[in-house]
Length: 487
Length: 124
Image 1: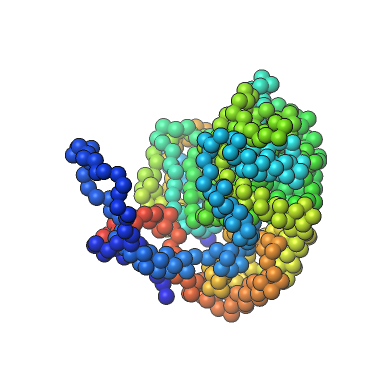
Image 2 (image 1 turned 60 degrees about the vertical axis):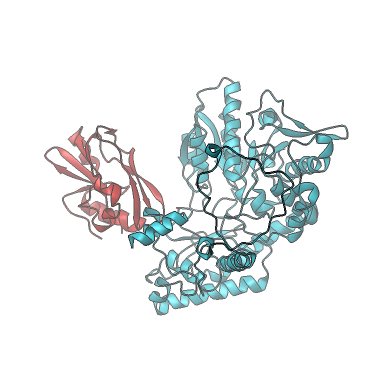
């Protein structure tokens, strides 16, 4: 049954869910004009009302803990509970950023060691854990590129090269950082077209942003040639860490010649994300760029861990204090519980699972890029193109089977893109079940496309009017009550 | 898919209709069908200059945001403001609902554009 109430609608005048202890402080008479003139509009509910309400609301959600979630380039993997337990330990959860460092050595040790582990995994010299998320990390990386060229008095470098298959955030970050983004064409398999790259590289190139493997899951095999072209032209290479999962312990961006990268702790190292954030997007750099990293940084002097705010060449402070500390602790727990021995297993299993799904479905779904993929791959709609069914309909139908749909209509290289990433820790039974459902949906499409066109049927709400939602969004309770009045 | 004969077309799916030395510019039926439901059109301003191959407006659908490029050079003399409140007009009739009207700078640029026949071949 659809549960469609807000907590405000549950409110009953005079109902209370708490009783405050007697105040130990004497009442203070506040001047009338300093007092709030009207009561805040808070729901009046009992504890029982609150519990039942939010439990019902939670049933409307789909998350990694309720079902399969093959959302490409988002790496939605299970977040082990031990990570939560550790982040919730009193020594972390009650800490304050202004405490003297002598009293926060444990946390600073985690920061320091996480920086070192990320360096080892990625092959870059030093990390800052301060950026809040992936796109924030991109912006910080680009600010470092800018400062590097500025310090070299190389002011004509105003362009950032971005492949047309890149994450949408890349050109957006470049624009926000004050660069002009220049598109470079992809080959059919989404890898960078070297000839096209050579045409756009010149002495105005500040750098290039790449994901490897790219958004269609193919490894950029010409990466060494690309890095040579960019470096010889005087530019820097930025690695978008969104797709780090399949190369963990197998290959390192630093070895490929990248100068700067961000890592999405919330993707690769398993901390909650996807509307549930917060995220964390540590930025790593090579030795020559180390001095530009955001301030403050955690350092070690003898046996003492320190927070260093003084760094003349730093691009400055880019977050409150030290970023999203809770996410860093979770990632650290994930890294240590797996250990360096198991990281390559994560990579291999994510690649195996993606290839297994791809090969098991390519007779019914159109596979535009053949060959072995990494952690994700794309289908371009149904193989039988005479059927009047679009990727959106397939995605909506999947909801009826308690599965989150893959990423749809991205990247823009194909018309009916579905980007599927099954991740490493789903069991063969779950993956086989997904394959079975995808085959069932393809059969339904052939038999009667309207089954898909009218889906979903079993969800809290049926097919939404996306155009209306974009034109007249209802994003608050006030919008909602206003919309009822309009009707 | 409709492709009116009297118009000029571009490979990036815009059309041009010439009337008394002025030109109306919009997007093709093929383009609106590929984009899906249009939810927003970011319009330029009257008096802005547009130049061949460069973006003058952005169109956002439920699927993606795309640039609309000028097929020829000119100065904008009118903007279809109805699209601000009713972007869906582009889906309803992409040829009736032009986006901008321009003063043509150089009519000979029209010769570089595609005919209806050539454009139809391109989109097959």
